[in-house]
Amino acid sequence: MINEEELKKLREISIRIRRHIVTMTGLAKSGHPGGSLSAADIITVLFFKKMRIDPKNPRWKERDIFILSKGHATPVLYAALAEAGFFPVEELKNFRRLRSHLQGHPDRLMTPGVEMSTGSLGQGLSVANGVAMAFKIDKTPRKVYVLIGDGELQEGQIWEAAMTAAHYKLDNLTAIVDYNGLQIDGPVSKVKEVAPVAEKWKAFGWEVKEIDGHDFKQIIEALDWADGVRGKPAVIIAHTLKGKGISFMEGKVKFHGVPPSEEEMKKALEELDKQEREIRK
Amino acid sequence: MKEFEYKHLRDAYGEILVELGEKYKDIVVLDADLSSSTRTAKFGEKFPERFFNIGVSEQDLMSTAAGLAIAGKRPFVSTFAVFAAGRAWEQIRQSIAYANVNVKIVASHGGITVGEDGATHQMLEDFAIMRVLPNMKVFCPADYYETKILIRKVFESDGPSYVRLSRAKFPVIFDETHDFEIGKAQVLKEGKDLTAVGVGITVHGLLITAEELEKEGISIEVINSPSIKPLDGETILNSARKTGKVFVAEEHSVIGGLGSAISEFLSQHYPTKMKFHGIKDIFGRSGNATELLRFYGLDPEGIKREIQKFLKDNA
Ligand SMILES: Cc1ncc(C[n+]2csc(CCOP(=O)(O)OP(=O)(O)O)c2C)c(N)n1
Ligand SMILES: [Mg+2]
Image 1 (cartoon, rainbow over the protein chains, first blue to last red):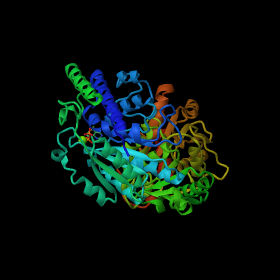
Image 2: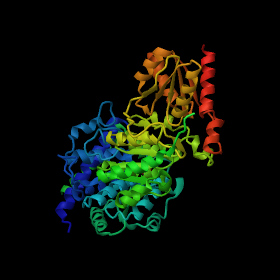
Image 3: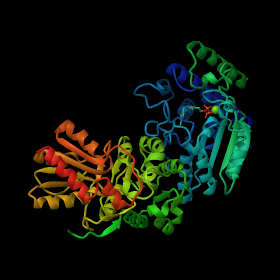
Image 4: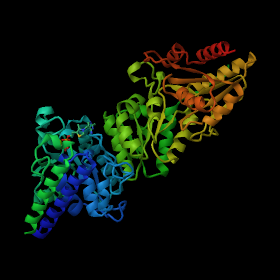
């Protein structure tokens, strides 16, 4: 069971993560806030509730592995890693700067806690399959999680990998689709429709669950549900809002890869402060 | 002329894979519906739990191998060279080379000796597009025995590698005692009038040419350079210092291959007159392997002709 205290704690963490997303991209004057904010609640649950990880020992032999297939969402990943203690929170301000270990897209060799270098869309699910296969050979209970964008579903390799995961019955793998409905050039439905998403995954041999990707209870329950799926890979289709948490970014295509201005950054942080006060009430 | 035995490089690969697989339980092998051709099927029969046929999905194939590597396995990945280096180039770039993971890509069916299948299947650009990738090492053995030792040494080294093998049987020029070292070329025959560097099938042609021209009083130094990257510039430079002329023969485009790699080195350290003998910026065509080698002047006679011309033009 999930108690209220824990939910409150997760909500608070997600607000801190959103604050980092806003300031990181704002200070860097570049980066991808929209798709980071839509994934913030999912990432919060993964890193602060679900996954077996040890921030003090990033290469811990028993850890679960998370692959950010939608690699442009580094702000949310770095924010979670810093909050979890993989590296100091102060380093976030160097995001995307020369000589920083926080590259624009994830780099497994530079950043503690980053498991795979991604950024070219479509490759992360295949990588996660490889990890899951290795875990099967080793007969270890370790799990692998992979976060995929909805626009990213247009990559052919995703469906190659979807077939592979089903064929090899990778039930130690959980994929999560950040179904925020937007990509760079506009709504996914206008650029190139990916719907019906659930039916596609089902047809490829996956167990599918659809949830509200901003409802902590649903996220936790879905991840637990995935643990129970046997003989098939599981995918959680998380319906989300791009830019979630910052009123003027929500549902805005523009904030995919445009950082907030100084003015917008201030406004966004005020909104988050207000949200935090409400939780603490 | 000496009679040569002909053997498949890919047979050597299939055999050594099984041998290594017995000993090292962390080896996994992936293929993309060509395991009988690439010879990874042997490993698959012996160790089914460590063999993954990914189907006709080369992009997925490469990234999956990267995933196995980050989880501690030592993957070998095989398909035809054109689909490995070509179709999955960007997956190799991002998930293997940039991520710097321990994945060994062993691609069969490189070059024109693929034969009858024609241009779509004849990879003539792989040295170029693989060696340009940071962290990636690039190799191409000359015969059955060199394949065995090369695969073993590549396996023992850390990080990403690309090895090109071939469909056709190649003449056996070495034996069990042959050695190979990453980053090392070998002077197979000493000479003073010309340095002739070969890789893969052309090494045989160079050896025959050198033997024949010796009788005419022309002394050729033959160098085998299976390690295209890292390149043994030193050995080639030392030879160039002696001969003053470098001829390179390869079953690859004259753009970006071994010849280019050598000229990149020599032009900066010891500028030397060079001749690149390979496929002249064109696609291949159908025919059998022997006919095609002759057609493109990469058989012993063609190589001899080109060398004589190069020597005459630069007398
Ligand atoms: C192979 C590849 N093509 C193009 C891009 C450029 N790109 C970055 S993000 C993006 C849109 C992704 O949309 P979606 O998956 O929906 O991401 P999200 O909405 O979650 O940010 C594109 C086209 C890329 N990174 N990789
Ligand atoms: Mg999207």
